[in-house]
Amino acid sequence: MNILHFLESSKKRQELILLSNSLSDFGLSPTEWCLMKEDCTSYKITNKIEPNFFFRGQIQFKNGRKRWGSIQLAGL
Image (cartoon, rainbow, N blue to C red):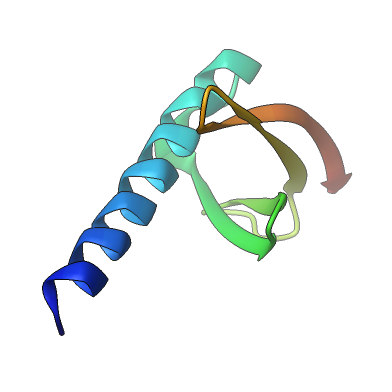
């Protein structure tokens, strides 16, 4: 693994952590949810205990950073 690949994967990991932590802005505890990228602007947000309970989150790019644009309930 070269240094450029390492830095890019580190940046993606940091973005994922920031998105996960900001779930609390929507009343969700970050430790209870798993994020799975679906495409470049959407994530599936699945409950770790009850996988049939999930949301779909759309991201926006603001000041060069990923932020949640919306989160909607998708399955119970």
